[in-house]
Length: 325
Ligand code: ADP
Ligand code: MG
Image (cartoon, rainbow, N blue to C red; front, side, top):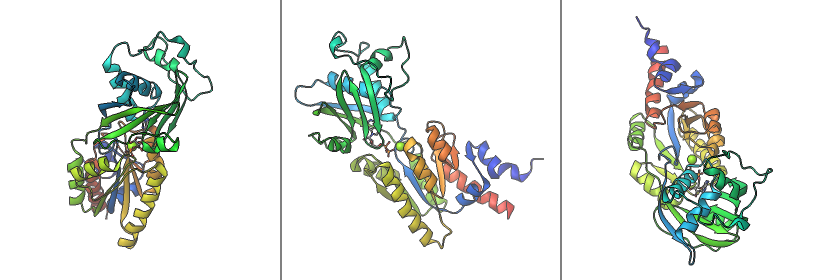
């Protein structure tokens, strides 16, 4: 017969697609009081789609999306992927100025750009782009067709003294500028994962006292997602280092509430989440779509990217401890 322990412990968890890197983490999960979530890719599915293009006067929508997609050529951020996908969906010939060779920039061997695939259509775009710099929590800077292009949020524009037109359209907004001139805004929308609301409800049923969402996205977007999911507390417009500070503040509160017994779990997916995953009592990473850095920094990896697996893991942890002790 199968021993009871087959269904419990690390082995039982891994059979559910929940990889636990040590029995101490499973034990800690059993006394989780606070669960802190990153938004994009963790509670939302991270597949954004472009919903609106707002060109500045004299800038066409085609020019706006083309230059933004070019600047995002090498970014693995879900936002970048959606901008490229939208550009590609518009036309098979995505280069309106392809005969204007005078504007073409040569690839720079010192730049951080990588991944050009000879023979693929992205090669032509790749040749237009050099000196790419990704600024976490803000966006990208790149030289496109010899112009200094910025694509990102209001923080990125403010940092470069770009006079941009803030839009209050619901959704995540990317602003685009070239050589110091504002070109317009790209509005993108993300959708919450189908199981995210149930995941929050199940955590509450499992005795978790507080759920929190941290995000680099704008406050109205963050509030709407938190309200839809029933999350207790939300902090938006955060840079990666701000997320660490928020988790430290929450850790202090959690430990004080419970005489050192309550644990704080952070759940994230992105490369920027690694410092927070390390700082939390229990770092939980999404494994299927998550970045390698997040998976490495985490104590527990959810292979199915299902946020409801956290509540399942807490129940399993408690059952396991019940069997052992
Ligand atoms: P979250 O905290 O929700 O996981 P991130 O920290 O990854 O989000 O990003 C925060 C914000 O930074 C995004 O909402 C976007 O405004 C901006 N941003 C990040 N990466 C990019 C990118 N590659 N292109 C444009 N904007 C970006
Ligand atoms: Mg993220």
